[in-house]
Image (cartoon, rainbow, N blue to C red):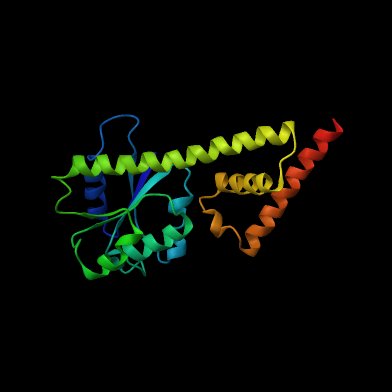
Length: 208
């Protein structure tokens, strides 16, 4: 399991990656904090939610300061939230009560103070882990439902609603996007291809 931490400053990124790691028990099952520098455009950062091992993301707010990024942490959070509505996202900042953050607070799980982090590391760690558990539960529920529909498709026919659900779940297993974001022209083509695969499976099963 990975937690990505994005910070524009090399020294700060190293320092706070270590501090965030100290929030979690020294245990092989604990997530590993991985420091990541920002890239120029928001679309360059979609890999953060596309990594199959990522379970949470922490963003520094002042990502523009290095001159590389063209966005703030809260803007990146909003972009990532549009790609994956379930993954826990946090802002880490020296100014947790700034006006720009108060307006965007609903887009993240929490806004963490850099100054308070050392004293509150156990509390922060416990809260982050609870959010991760909830996120993993969602992924597990999807996987269980997918396997159930897959078994049913082999032994009998799926009704129209089940076919649609199966296609959506299959797509979500390989891409970190929510169902309501699937219906673009490109993704509809992918859904059509998956629908044809299901029909092919059913056709072959009937022949046997």
